[in-house]
Length: 194
Image 1 (cartoon, rainbow, N blue to C red):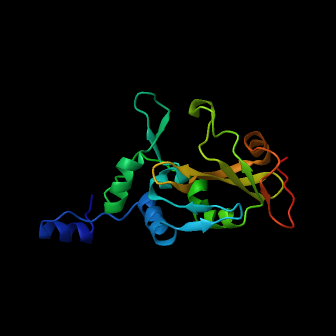
Image 2 (cartoon, rainbow, N blue to C red):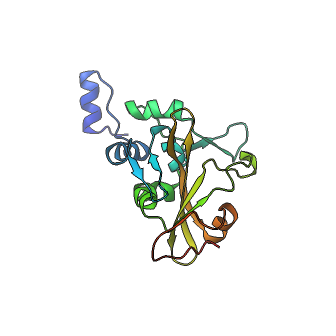
Image 3 (cartoon, rainbow, N blue to C red):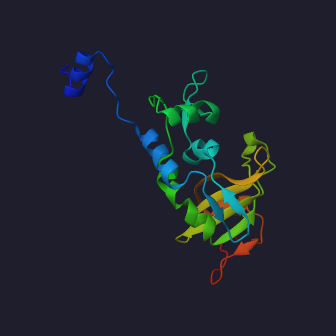
């Protein structure tokens, strides 16, 4: 295989060629520039902090479970975030949820201007049975059936309300997870999660 000019130059200088950043690294750098450590004041009211340790959950970064072929494991922030910080993450084998990644930069609007906010019924269920941490569910409507949700909750280690996770869903799914009636409904809007 023919070597590129940068590979030939690196070989001549006796150094390793620099690899361009992968899509996960690029997404992380964009997050650092636009969202890192941001605090959003919501209509609940609560102040929601965006912390690095939850970045992997927001994009659902996973790797294959070698013990169970076909299964995937959530990447550990304590391992992956330091690699993203120094640009050393080898992205081969990892996967992200492209829809979550594409919606990441719309989270501020969801937190500041949701259609409604509910208490989270799934907060106390066991994780194996579909529990999702967080006290509140912020809901934004996209058409009659599609919803974007964000879960917020108090982080015991930092004593801050954080964004736990966010993803697209359906009206029916929200109905199963949200306590009715809503704790907040945006003025001029009716809660259609019922």
